[in-house]
Image 1: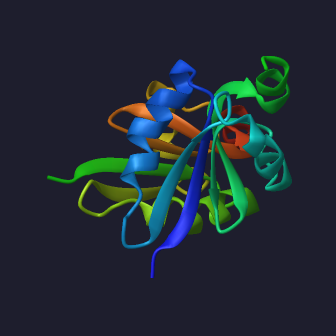
Image 2: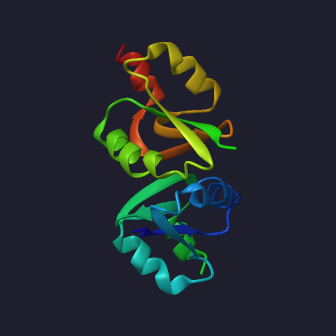
Length: 81
Length: 81
């Protein structure tokens, strides 16, 4: 059964590229990917932090954070609000 | 048709986890993933560098590098030889 994966981003160029290239390349048989734009959906920043996300773009798989390259720190995303 | 993806690592714990969780989770319809251990296959370090890989673990998709978390810098991998 597909597990849930969450891709957190903030609309930055690095984020958009990682989303298109990597988040959408996960095997749909393994993961159902939810895309969350933390700039627009600020209520979910705490959830990302709790999962260990330090920067975006990041993918949370099975509750573990995988930071993909570096677009912006979570502190920057919070500060931009 | 599936494109080729290369996952470069160096056997570090962060690498092994990323390989199991992420490299093997790519959609086989999109990507055929080759796993390269740069510590054992040092002849391919130059190829990783040319693709823009700065640290491992990293995934190269369509010729572009995606660094996943941080295990070791490529300089460290080279120095360990």
